[in-house]
Length: 303
Ligand code: AMP
Ligand code: FES
Ligand code: ZN
Ligand code: ZN
Image 1: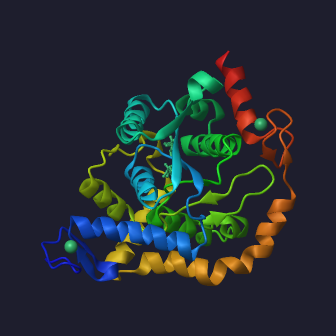
Image 2: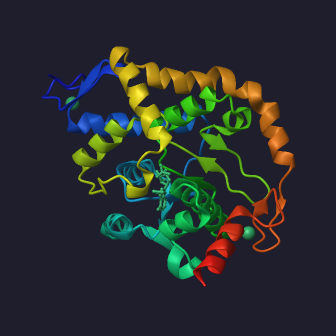
Image 3: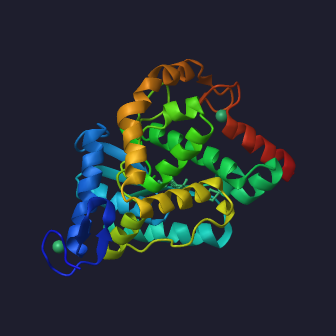
């Protein structure tokens, strides 16, 4: 197998692009795909000051590396979720990445700063760990980005993630979720601009990027996410991708090109109903935001 660019030995084949790449050209391919997503979706101004949420996994660390290569002014944000050994190890990968490159890293620890962790929240609320986890992360990401005055909050959601979420939203025709499922959401009353520059790359590609550029990352998946329905959707989409390479990218990118703007009205309607949380001042559709409610439930039950 030869590299499509230089004809040297290739180490990966990308069937949907009908291409094979050596280490150097795989890294270039990944950077080009991110640059193209940023350009096509008008994600970031050149040299923007951005906060990137990093979990210690392949996607967000690869993205942090790529955005530095592309000349953005970046700082990382790691949220310690308190999921035992998994969180400890994830945090160490993030710290190592940042310190080796002299990059700024902000850290927020749920247990010591907010009095709970994800396993206790899941137990006390009797909801899935991922729902407490998702709402905690969103709240803390938004707050850190606003407090630090960053131009955008960036996350490492990749094509597999976004296609699986889109699949789930289409299966139930959740129009409000579909309306919001965009790779860029502009800044608005107290919420930062949110950007997902990895929407043109799969997790196989970001993992390969880490391997060829020497980035060490947390390989284990979150132990609390087992049984999450998006895992099943990812498997289904992967089967379709094997039968017909390019299906996944087409599903997601065609939705962005042809359909999502039909839902601009639905997006705007959802926007009118935001007030502020009486307790923390964050934008919220109710008097007390979901994060403050979760915090007080865990504080009450923990007593
Ligand atoms: P996930 O929700 O685990 O699929 O992760 C999606 C994205 O959220 C990652 O690519 C990161 O950008 C971000 N993220 C997930 N977990 C954390 C964390 N503990 N701290 C900071 N960012 C995170
Ligand atoms: Fe959130 Fe696992 S990372 S529940
Ligand atoms: Zn090559
Ligand atoms: Zn609040």
